[in-house]
Length: 197
Image (cartoon, rainbow, N blue to C red; front, top):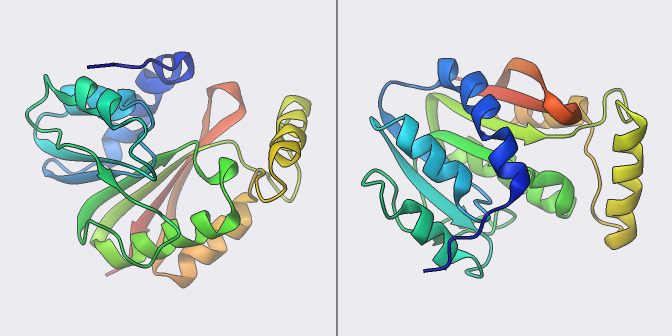
């Protein structure tokens, strides 16, 4: 099986896990939206054996890689195809919904669908975690992020960095209340939201 490796996922997996771990339940079901190669899901599954992990991606292009990463981990399920912008997801419940580096490389409908999906499948107290670069007060936090935003829009005008305040406001409308905003390496953030009861 072809186990692909993305260097960025190797670099950020430890720091994300360290920041995320205190907010996670002791047991429960963890769904990742946009698993890519499967590296993060496998790393988390290895570190958190009391949780079960469901990787997903919007196409099956990297399912072989995800499955290869997941094979040593009995608590990591085979990948499922999930279009976050759809109203119909292949999972109907979760304790944690996690997505890294997805919302800026997809149309805004993916962000909206991801938040709506979190509102549907997370139970009271469930956690939504979003990792990646964001605008703050409508502006990139660094010149490198401004350049990155321009390059994304050059590839697809529907892509680009999203504003943190807009994400938070839309999440709140769906019953997802802000819990934490964590500064992360390489000008990224980890945004945590808790499903209201």
